[in-house]
Length: 162
Image (cartoon, rainbow, N blue to C red):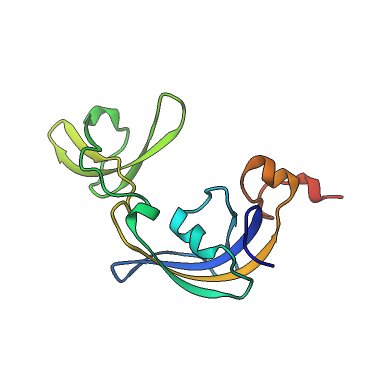
């Protein structure tokens, strides 16, 4: 079965940036996503189009098809009192936007009462190198299509009890 719009795909993957492994799937715990619904970065999704179970590929994703280019203006100074905990440079924290969404940011520097933070994704501006193995391809269920993402066995899903 080929990977195409509305298929659920299981991937084993390793992501390398500048020769360093940044992220990888755990043995027996593939990444599961719904193809064609922007669940994964565009460059990887495009490369997987038409592939089959068992295919292994290496994909190099440029920033514009990954996490975007770095925007040097996407930084801000926040008051230190806005942080509840100790602040560590290089750590990622999460802010809640007015619409309730969560925005990750990285602490760049501490300057007295001010904290300089970066709202760029950690991998913005980076070339991403993926080693990927397709371990499964199946049709999505109606519920998955309605929700716009794949459901995995460890999700709370009571419809399969029958």
